[in-house]
Length: 258
Image 1 (cartoon, rainbow, N blue to C red):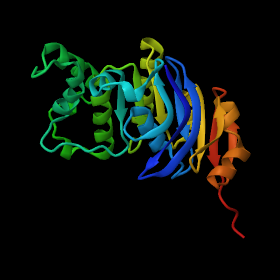
Image 2 (tube, rainbow, N blue to C red; image 1 turned 45 degrees about the vertical axis):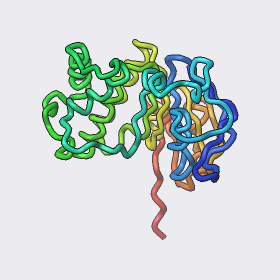
Image 3 (cartoon, rainbow, N blue to C red; image 1 turned 180 degrees about the horizontal axis):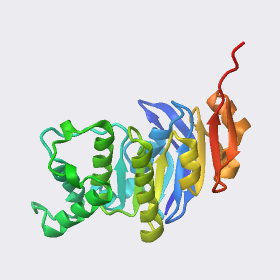
């Protein structure tokens, strides 16, 4: 499990998020939501141990800062919103990088590693693109390739920064369905940032709403996806309706023409 206790983080001494406390039980899904600039990505990086922070980020009770880089890579899979993709690699080669934490010193990937990657590519509808160079992919295809590398790590924790960016609705649903299966079948713990509030409410067990770096609401979708709360913190005109499955649906409202 993950537990955040009074976590504050930022860059060059300037705080971006402050005082965040929330438990994320094993096998659950926490979606971090909030307007642009709220600190969502920074909080995710703090959990991954990629930015300095105060307070405590605990992975199964152990501070993330006490883990070696290899231990962290075996425990946590992190997919950034804007990844740096190496030149000259195919989709398969890139996904195989996710197996690095499981290899010994100077070891090369073996048949089992390739099998893991092939299974991941199939689950992400990337098999037909396995030999393609990363630079030739569309934005949505690159996003799925990044997730393939993370899933190939076979970690117990997934940190996903806007994983549906650039994906059409079909591929977005397929990707989130896959992550949800990993959570329910394998006990994977998921923390993600999501701009789509309706999708966040459908897939996550709990939501954490940030605004200007502080927690302004947390709980289940019915609690956090409140029309007045969202309108105030997003500075938006919207309505929250009951969806056909009982989950909240967030709908924008057009400004009346005068």
